[in-house]
Amino acid sequence: MHRTPDSRPSTLRLPAAIALCLAAGLAACASVPMPVEELAMARSAVANAVSAGGEEFAAGALQQARDKLARADAAAGQDKPDEARTLAQQAEADAQVAAARSRAAKAQRTLTALQGDNRVLQEEMERQSRAAPMPVAPTSPRN
Amino acid sequence: MIRTPQQRQAALGLSTRPLSLPRSATALATLALLAGLAACAGMPQDNAALNQARSQLQAAQADGQTSRLAAPELQRAVDAVAQADAAFARRDSAESVDHLSYLAAQRVVIAEETRRQRQAEATSATAGLERDRMRLAARTREADAAQRTAAVAQQSAALAQQSAVLAQGRTEAAERQGDAAQREALAARQGTRDAQMRAEVLERQLSDMKARKTERGLVVTIGDVLFDNNRAEMRSGAGRSMDQLVAFMKQYPMRKALVEGFTDSVGSDVDNQNLSDRRAEAVRGALVGRGVAAERVTTQGYGEAYPVSDNDSASGRQANRRVEIVISDDSGSIAAR
Image 1 (cartoon, each protein chain N blue to C red):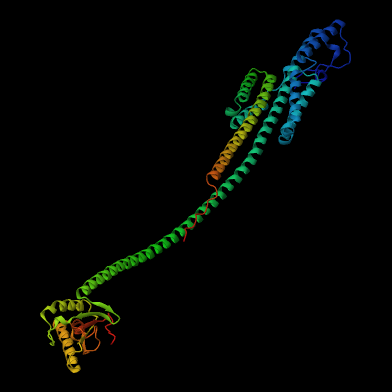
Image 2: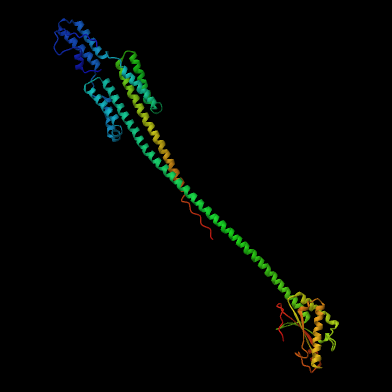
């Protein structure tokens, strides 16, 4: 923070006071460090979502995360740290949604496959028990 | 970071203490300050994004499964909504509240996706157990079925073998019985045929010889006419009767013959005895001469004894002058008179 606080009330002249006030106001809004950490976390979250199967299972959320990450990078390049931070945080959240959605979809797919297997197995067993009831002992020949 | 107006004022070094500025300058400065503040922080009465995040969170919390299966994720959503609430309460900028509300809403989504994942995993675990159970049951059943099939096959094989043995035994026995029966039948038929033939032949021969059946055996009588008066020599006409008798004796080698001679009552007993002896002997000589073994033929003269008719008439006396040939049965014995 580089401010020039001027607490000497007696020596202030009007133009200087106005300029100071405007400068201070602007500095309060814009003088923020670049969100390096947030951008890195967003990038990591996107990679994580991809490895969780986001391309297949959560394409929409993943694409949104990538878009926001790209816009965050662009904002950082244009010296807009607040916008970059906001977009990076949202990109991270979107990527985490994509990852969670992918994991849920994969678990669901596994379950569906398992249930399908079980159904086939069940049907197979029922079919077998119908086709092959208890075998009957052959009648002995008459002596 | 976003700051409250109070913080911002402190950072700017502004105090609540009045400045010794000209009135107009003070008014200008106040306006400028207010304008700057307004640029940084709009203060809406309500935030749609925050309301949305709150209701999403409430829905997630109402679902007991999410708080049970995704407790940490739900807690992060609760925290995020609280942050957005705090920002709204501090009257942070709408953009800031929107942003925090967006992050909070995404946290709720993450919690719900996590709940979906955990639910599917839990159900999968159950389904996996069910599959294991069914596979075990199927294997057990297959093993049982295989065992039963093997047992049945074994039983069938044993029974088949038993049947085969029995069938073979029956077949052999039947064959033996059949053979024996056939042989017996053949023999019986043969025997019947032979007996019939023998009986027919005998009957024919006996009828030819004018034999008669008696208790002592077959008796063939050679009448007086075959002998000259008072002589023992047979006439030539007796040859045919002799031939038939010889043929009969040859056909039945077990049988023996007793030749008995008889006379009428004319003349002395001694003469009659001699004559009967000689005549019987003459017949025996004829049989032996024609090939009958000598030991099979014996003779006996009875003189005038055993007449078959009266001696008062010529025809009666003629009937009494005779030779009888008694033929034994197959035992060879002839009962004496």
